[in-house]
Structures are given as C-alpha cells and as structure tokens.
Image 1 (cartoon, rainbow, N blue to C red):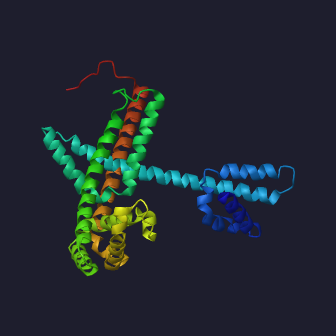
Image 2: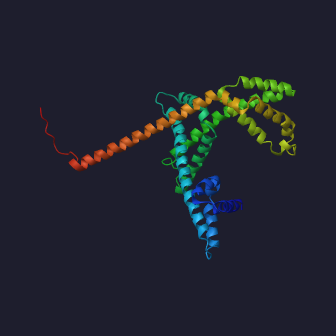
Image 3: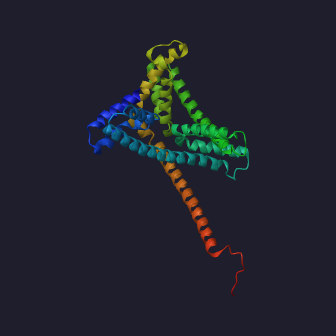
Length: 318
C-alpha cells in the first residue's frame, strides 16, 4: 500500500512538469523504482486504464520503466564491483592458507590467524553480510543440482565456510574485548566513576578499536528494546542495568562525537583505504593477466589456422 501511494505521489509530481525534469524528480524515488513490486504496480495501473485514454500517464510510466532499468543496471554493476572486492579479500586469505612455506597445520593456522587479524578493518559489516550471502547462495545452488555433499562440487562452499568461521572468530575476539571494557565501566558504583574510567579507556583506545567499540555499545542499547522506555517485563536482570547502559551510551557520544571518531580512527581509515586500493590493484592485475592469456591463446589459434599445426619438419640453416 505504501509503495502504491508513493507511485501515485510520483505521478502527481511529474504530471505538470516538463519532460526534462522527469529524471531529476524521479531520482528522489529510487527505492520505489528499484522495488520488486514496481512491475506489478505499473501493470495494475495499465490494466485499470486499459479502456480509457490516458496517453500522458502511459508515457510517464514508460519513461519511469526506462529509468528503472538504467538504475537496475547501475546497481548490478555496483554489486559486481563490490562482490569482486569482497572476493579479493577472500582470495587474500586463501593465499595465506596455500602458502607452501607453512609446513605444518599449526603454522598455517597461526599464519591465517595473523592474516585475518591484520585485515580486521576490512572485515566490516558489508564483508560479513557478503560471506553469509555467498554461503547461502552456494548451498542453494548445490542443493538444486543435488550435489551439496559431493566433494567434486562443494569445494568452494567449504572454502567460504572456513573463511567465514575464521572471520567470525576474529570479530568475536574484538567484541569480547569491548565487552570486557564495558563490563569494567559498568562495575563502577557511581556515574562519575564510570565516566572517568570510560574517558580513560577512550583516550588510550587503539585507532582500530574506536568505530567497533561505538558500534558494540549502540548494538547493546538497541537490544534493550522496551527496556529503554522503562518497561522491564521479562528483562529483570537487564532492567537493573538499563540506566547504566544508557548513561554509558550518552557518555560515549559526549566523549566521541563524530569529529573525534574521525580523528581517532584516521590511521585505521587510511590503512583500510590503502588495503582496499591494493586489493583493487591486485584484482586489476589478475584481470589483465587473464586477458593477456586469452589474447595469447587467440593469437596462437590464428597462427595455427594460417600456417598449420607445424607438424612437418623444419629445415635448419647453419
């Protein structure tokens, strides 16, 4: 119903506007134009006016469809670019696991742990979400083909799951460390003591921990649900801590406003940007090498077609 109303609102806005402004106005309705229900909504409107002359509305709807198609192409291109970036992170992790210099499983495990820890700023929500999506998609594809348990087909699935487990383990270490910090603060008896300890922790906090620490606190507050409003039914233990947790979030927002978060996270952000750039460059190099290999193979085929396979004898001149 909301999307139907949004479509009507968009049509109303476009109705008296010149065509050159359609794109500008429609760009404010991208979530509608990319909705899974857009086709059904437009079909319903076309069906409703099948026996009536509504040429202008038909024209507007047609232009909206064209714009929606262009948006979809942009989203697909962006999605492909993001997936390529995430796959490059996976490839970097796999590269460590396949390093022949690691002669034992223990060495490999330690190297993997170090590699994942060093890549921590890249293991953001987008990467975690991609891993979850990639595992689910691969499982569905194999299940549809009836080869989910076939080792000849499910190797990539196992790679994704191993990477996922390693990433989750590393993220869990960080979260547990932040929980320890939060617990120490909440154990203090007075608000002033809690503020002083929190301020000290924040002042000494490593650059890589600033954004994740704030995110964990926001997640804890978000999990309080109705407890934030004083409704502690079924949340007895949590209810006793709610005021302290809310004070903690308030103090964090005071000690870490957006500009200070940016300042304290600058080194981590710059490092992450460099790593992403490096991964992008590595992917481009890989694509160039692959294209070069294809071109070489193509030229070899052309030579063979032109001069034959070279199966005869060749005279050698001294």
